[in-house]
Length: 197
Image (cartoon, rainbow, N blue to C red; front, side, top):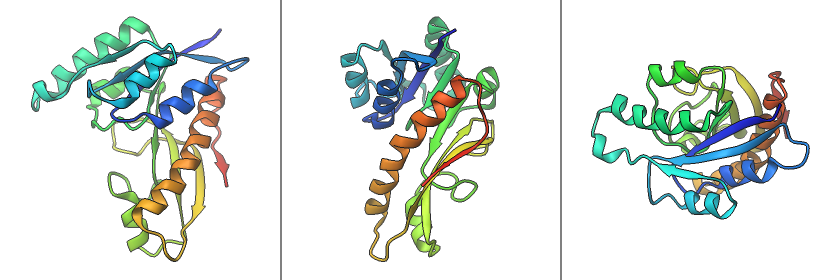
């Protein structure tokens, strides 16, 4: 049975685009919804142009009422009845209650080799630490930030003249390979971690 996938974004949605593009042919999943916390997110138009229904729940009017924001988000998601939720650059920290509702079915991509560098400014932190390699991780979402079981990682070498921006650009190329690969496996019920180089 084909799995239904909802994708949450906050910006341009480049990972979302790669996920949607991958869900064709004999892929075990199909995109049913793309949502954002920003009505102006560029990814919403891209999703619409690819024929995927979209919605936005602007987080700003909720001003600290995370439960209220998430109740609206949940209502939109519930209408689509997704089997899997993919966070793809969704820049809101979700409460334990929201995560518990979708636990085991919600994936996230993070631009570091977890467990290193949870949270923000991952590329700057990798450079400051003198790391020889960086990369990205797809993991199951749990209530602890960037902490769930790892489903896949992709690595890139850190070059001597790297800046946070140049490193981020190379990691993003790997994100675009890794997330679709992990989603396809996950939709087939495979959760053993994979590594891309």
